[in-house]
Figure 1: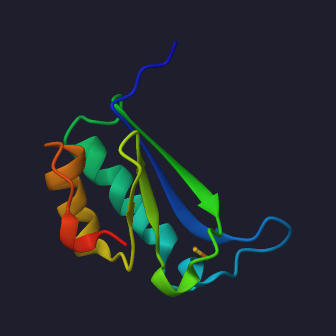
Figure 2: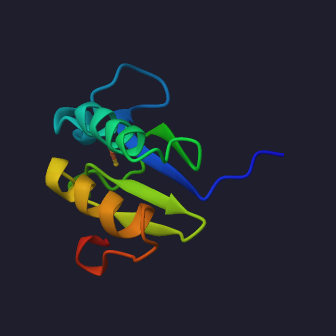
Figure 3: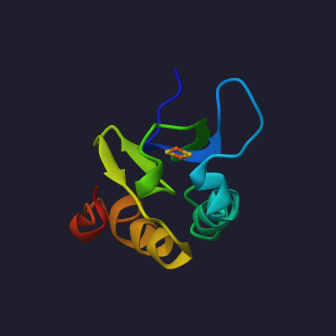
Length: 102
Ligand code: FES
């Protein structure tokens, strides 16, 4: 059985039936996924935290959007700085970043 500390789902803006063209894609979500993965690798957290991209959650005005499980915490309006804060506080130290929740 795979045991992870967190499972992070981040919208990359794809639609279920079509090309990537959602708001999160337009707002560079794929660069944020790369940033997130690099931050986790730099901190040697890759084996504890699973990252997957998703298609549109239907809340594009809050994009880019990510969800952290098992906590069920949604973060939105993400940029590189916010990703770093979420890694620092939530993913590395278990403290939800209340100011970035949606
Ligand atoms: S494209 Fe990400 S929530 Fe819609």
